[in-house]
Length: 114
Image (cartoon, rainbow, N blue to C red; front, top):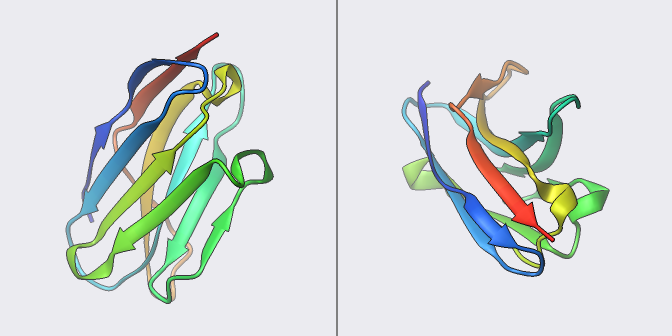
């Protein structure tokens, strides 16, 4: 599985950004976005299952929205009301059915200035 990400950039606090990711390959059961800030561990931001069930980190609930186009293995993360604490490298991931192994994208930088 290969993942190609797009989006990201530099915005001011309160603004919005959208990240997109498309995965090659078949049998994908969920896609997700993680992020890693300098000096911190990588953390889950949101995951979307093919059942359309989604889970979010508490810190982004109500501000971020994850959506997928299952037929195209594409996941989008809409990020509203961005905060400086959201600054990180954002990584797209995909999992195949029956596996907990993540395939990763190359990462895209999101920087939010105050």
